[in-house]
Image 1: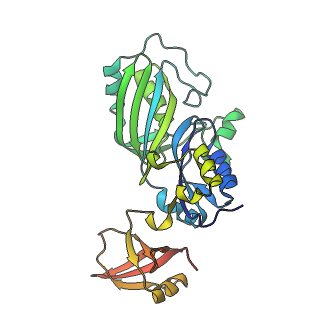
Image 2 (image 1 turned 60 degrees about the horizontal axis):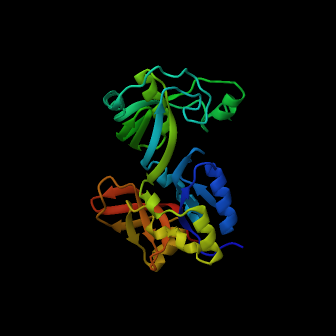
Image 3 (image 1 turned 45 degrees about the vertical axis):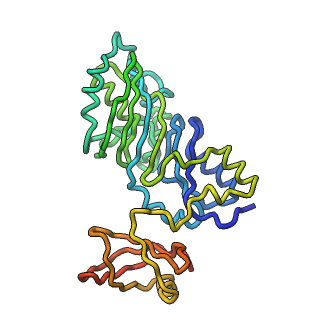
Length: 303
């Protein structure tokens, strides 16, 4: 049976093992809601925060996709793998010796600011309509693209023998296992990602997430809605504008809103709320004339 009123974001604390698609499919069964999507996948070996959009919130996905992400993880020095993590086949012999903590920290300092970043050969990125991991499993290794990403923080927390514990804050599109692989190349000893846990995605924190077991229990107790962050509280960085009753009708029919407003400089989108405080639409600022703002309904959520 479908749970009522489940429109918003569900923060899942994913266990290592299942794919992100597995978690989405399980949540669809538990909540009885087909409209569930994710805000960026986690590799099967990774755990931690997996934000899911539920119901009408699936239409807001694009506004979250550029959010920065935070991780804590462990990499192992000594050899590299074809997947850049512990699940892959070795692509190098064991190193005779691994560098010490100072050398590891010095090498890790290159991961700062905007850097060129190699897409792993085993990834979901598509080439010619085929996912790279599908091609790789067939033995068709293709040259992967190099893309520019931004590393806000890359911190080596502990180095003990071949084990390196680290923290990274990065832009969307960053493959943390590629950072481990590239660090191993720079050190000349090879390296791969041992484990990874995602802590944050934009405004969302794993501290507020629920496990699958907790979600199942809440559903059985009729409290599944408590796990869903309501639509009106999402996109906290957007200015919120309260609409009058007549304006709600105009917005839901696609008409522009003309208002005298004092909005943040550079703001492109705003939240449009009905008189009860519910999210009616996401509006795009299409023109500014002094304090007179024209807002076009970009995504209408209520009809």
